[in-house]
Length: 265
Image (cartoon, rainbow, N blue to C red; front, side):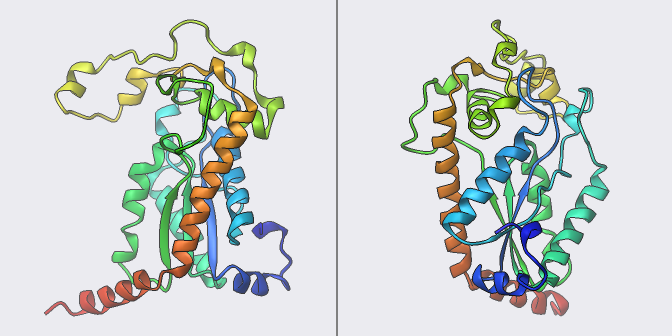
């Protein structure tokens, strides 16, 4: 069920039918090589969320694109939100979702750059009491077990064969296969290799390796493989939704924590 497609009269019933679970697909608008649309993460997050909710009912929130992407500000089309606004806006949205009766809020991450943001955001409920629980699930990561694809794992990456295949399955009209580089543009430049090998991180690391926002080799991308990958990701999310619906402990522990933190002496 998609939030924006429900009527106001139908909404309370939908909340009950889905066990009070809302799925918010998080993405960004950013460059994906030369051949994929700026909304690649948005399309993939939306599709995985819709397929997962068709397996295990949940209300799917409209596309949420206001997350972390400062590393692409040097490329046309990127929408990068100030970090303080990023946190406040997502917090505000979650509070509004909960006010509408959905007390289990699942942030479905479809953008690799969001891991740091979500690690911080997931701690916000420990600062002030909430009457809802935030759960984080990722719609990306290693190739799901059992999914056959026509490319080697070493070819994967940002705008690589996985993402390209999924967009071929969702919106083939937006994929420009003839624009995929035939040289080694997708290889890391290694301009901060010495620091990385010394265990040092910097905020400019992605730009240092992949300034064109292309990683891997997407030439073996295939729409059928993309459809299988989307189904596998959706099954993973559906399993997570079932576990979340069954969970009563997170809310109980959260309330216990609030009582303790209000008077720790």
